[in-house]
Image (tube, rainbow, N blue to C red; front, side, top):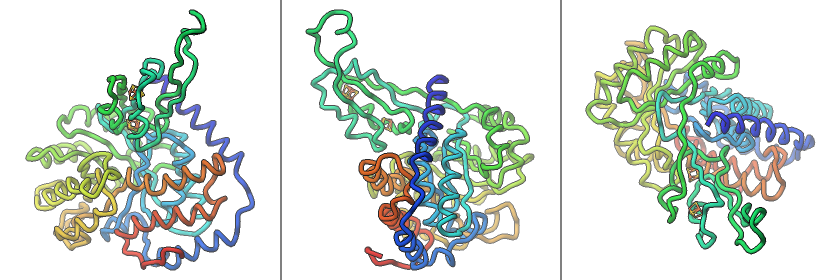
Length: 425
Ligand code: SF4
Ligand code: SF4
């Protein structure tokens, strides 16, 4: 896997360079004016506050680029679009090229409209975790009559197959059939696993990895990372402690330390308390619990968000939980806020013990993180743009930026309560 990761890094830097080199300097000022007008119409400058204030106000929104998603061109453009849409945080893979791409997208967005800068968060894991894996298969092993369901089911367009002459043909003559070429585009695969059960020939495997604590601590020492998220199963404290200890005093530079965990039923709060006691002596910043309902499923449909809401409802009722903001993720989509409203959890006042300050009163749920769904609604515009213009910076094509921004606003606005805007604004 190490070679693969190095390969991704090299690829990422290379593609990012290409992206910059191809950047068209002259943008359509009329198109960019339309983008600025849309931002004004929905009221972002007056309704968007700093990340810390948004956490306290219960209207925090985080874009999840994906702990394993490393396509720096898409990540840069997604970061630009969602910064303009007013997100408070952008969560990405713990990789130098990816972090640079996120910061570049944020800088470009702020150059268009001076909005509060979102925090940049990197995601790591303390043990095996669904978010930290890549699918892989040898396309030459695939039967040629396979209808390639893996390609169709992949939400990240991470599988690409074409036909080629068999390598065996080179050695054994010319009458051998063609084989598939291509396979998984490693930098785009984010480990959702949907391709595995649809393969009729059981050809797809996954390769898991754990982010290295030392490399993470080095990344945190740079000046362009604000927040860290640790993905954990919450079932064992030892790997969590080992990772936290391995990060050393780099955690003292953080503005936010988040833990992403699944609902482990009765044991959830006790494991949260155990993790909090590990972190507490070094915590000089806010902390947050990401309630991971149904991982990597928000793009599947309306019902995907139910588990994260049920998780939030259960946890909000338990007063013995440790300090820290609560934020939803895992299956979140355009229906999440409606679901929160129905159960009385959307921006509703709560009891003390939310932020560590005993006298503070804040909403029980501080906000929502959007991943697969957020990437899907903007990603289809990015794909179309790429098919028309090749690798590009989205601000160089304001008509696409406007479309992408409308999509992003329709999602972020559910939490931020933006003013409505006409479909063709
Ligand atoms: S694991 Fe998910 S993202 Fe990766 S190739 Fe399979 S379907 Fe695509
Ligand atoms: S579904 Fe399986 S056999 Fe078919 S192309 Fe995909 S990986 Fe190969």
